Image (cartoon, rainbow, N blue to C red):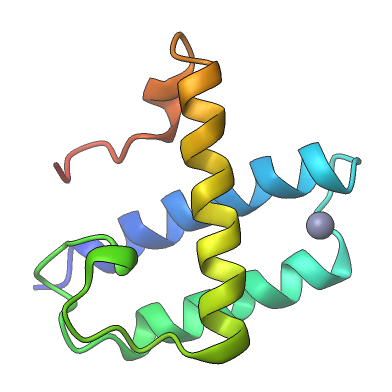
Length: 99
Ligand SMILES: [Zn+2]
């Protein structure tokens, strides 16, 4: 069973969209963020811990390196900050069933 990948993808997309709309404006993902999202999806598809469900930053053997890692950490830490500032909306950035 691979229940986690679709959920992770959905959450990742939600985070990148938030990051992009706050930094680059617009309703639609900009080319750069779209590209980063595609790369993140590739990592998720290739993830060898598919069923474990832990978030990428806490992965014991993260497959993200170099620019990919930077992009992911940048988005993640922005979302973290955003959640601190918007505690009322933070739930929308929480995975539906992965804790
Ligand atoms: Zn963008």
